[in-house]
Amino acid sequence: MRNIVGAFTRLINDQKRVAYLFILPSLVIITFFVIIPMFCSIVFSFMDFNIMFAKISFVGVRNFIKMFNDERVRGALFNTFYFTIILVPLQVMVGLIIAVIIKESSVMNTIFRGVYFIPVICSFTIVALIWQFLLDRDVGIISFYLKQVGIHWGLLKDPDQAMPLVAIVSVWKNFGFTMVVFLAALQGIPQSLYEAANIDGINRWDRLFKITIPMMLPTVGFCVIIALIAAFQAFDQIYVMTGGGPIFRTETMVYYIYNMAFRTLKLPYASANAVILFLIILVFSLFTFRRTSVHDREY
Amino acid sequence: MDVNTQAATRGQGRGLFTASRTGVSIFGKILKYILLLALTVITVYPFLWMIFSSFKTDGMIMATPASLFVANPTFDAYKKIWERLPFLIFFKNSVIFSAGVTICVLLFDTMAAYAFARLKFKGKNFLFLLIVSTLMIPFQVVMVPLFVELNKLRLLDTYLGLILPRAADAFGIFLMRGFFITLPRDLEEAARIDGCNEFQIFRKIILPLCMTAFLSLGLFVFNGNWGDLLYPMLLTSKTSMRTLQAGIALMMANVQGNAQGEYSLMLAGSFLSVLPILVAYIFLQKYFIQGIAMTGIKE
Image (cartoon, rainbow over all chains, first blue to last red; front, side, top):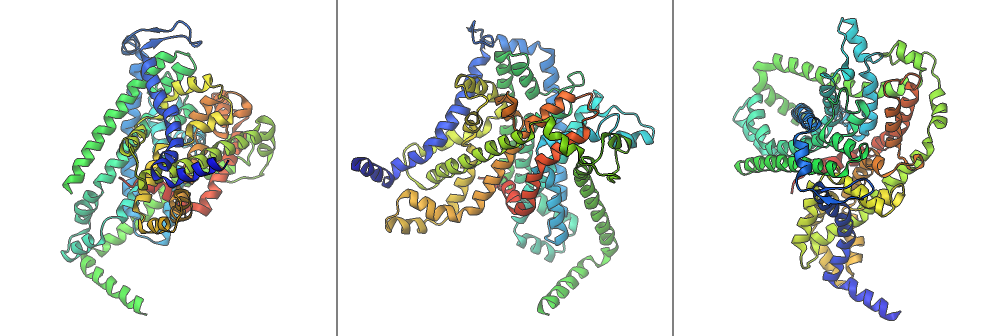
């Protein structure tokens, strides 16, 4: 017993050993539930097996060739990019504009900040559920008012309107997040820059375009990456609002992977799709990261 | 008095610069407030609509969808929801899952972060890079192998299976390490000289200094898991193990298309599920927003 206590005392007084002890739990968990599954995803994508894990065989790139010829993959890729292209610029721009407008600290601005942040803390399930009701073709208030001015839209039931609507609801939920990140960055701009500009008699627009926005560029890049990655991973809002429909027009890559894996039970094929999705996210985040680091160096 | 004079001089100074544009700035101010108030209405209305409509009958919701006015408030939905869904069980599951993950993350992440920030050991940089690089891997990419893994471990439909894969995460380690690095080293050196071991230094000196960051990370993790849909939905299939979000989303998916007769019920359920978060937000707004703003701090 004394030996164990002694060993323990020696252990916790030894910086090196204690360090490994501190890291061990996190490392084990991340290894088992992120790193190993990531490798499995890659391995699965070159395999074929059924749901019972029988008839296991290596099939090379057959899953990827199948993807290439899969109409639904093409649709899902298009939908993913379509969703991203609507979501990212809107979310970043609205967040930035609002942050610039309410950056001064006053009671009103604090209230506005608090209010705009409410959708961020609520779950996407609930947000999507409320908006699904508001956007309902038959009884929702949006179509209620549209009908009064003679517009009869299908909204979420319309194949052309569903995806933009889901994207706009996502912007509604997330713009408060970008706003807060921008507000934090705005507070980081040294006040002396503005004072110097005031002495030089620079007008408000020049102040915005020549000081605020250039100083904010790294943060803009950061928000673009975050919004981009979130957009590529969107699932909850689509699951609740459209279920991938109408006629697969809101089925994104993630949604397709989910369907393949857990509805059609084609795990290897779903893994191949997941690997491609991973590569797309990787390329986009590295590209954006590089672009913004370049700006970092310039300023 | 002194402050007033100061403000007055500053006001005058500003007046000099913008004298020729006073008209424009008043107009701009009005425009600004119209924009901010419109955005406030757009942000708040859906929530108010959810709350008020949950006290209406379905007939009333469909007759006047836009109205927030409740003529004869009824608690039917709040009575019926307990029979219609095992709501209390969902609630309990959500609490156990979110709280379990949060406690583990706070413990394991701060331990690992402390080691990476402060202790010297072999392979430190490699291990840190390994952990941080897992930030690039989205859950959607590893969800198929993770599901298979937990199935093999017979951990599906258990609390352990829900909590364990999320018990540590790279983001928290990255974040807390950033905080620990900024703390002055003198304090712990002094403690070390006084004979404290690493555990005591960590608990008595480092943790109290990082309380704000600690709370913010905790809220961030708790809220993220409370609102998550895909992850708990995948890893549970029994109704008795469903979380709130999964339970509500599945109910929504089941009635998609013929939601008649369920409107107020689902709105009541949504309101109840979001209520704890909203109440917490009112009291802990600072930490909620800080948790988000922290994610915007780079490097």
